[in-house]
Image (cartoon, rainbow, N blue to C red; front, side, top):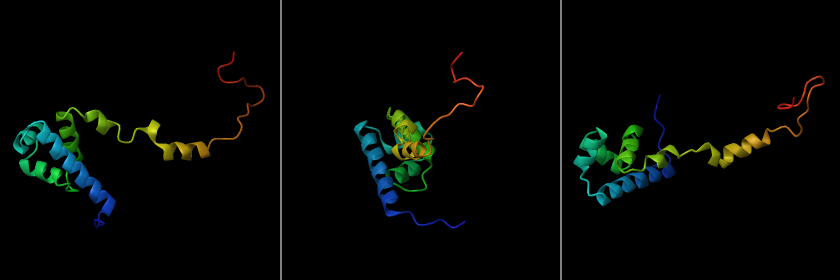
Length: 110
């Protein structure tokens, strides 16, 4: 399968994340070598991640966030309770009325 070109907004987002990783690393006074050791990767991997390279494994980004104490932000990327599009699509499929069958009681009724 051929790789399709990366859309420009995705490329920009990757670069922004990489820039933010580099900034977080420097603010914590960590060298690329120190970060690489702490995430179990090579210095080249850290450089590529900070450059926003699209081939960087997601685990390295997650591990870097863990080192920075920001792993919760990664976990909440697609928090389903905040997915307004997904919730709206589900709401469109909700039935207008709920009917009970004859001879059965309402759920929760005794």
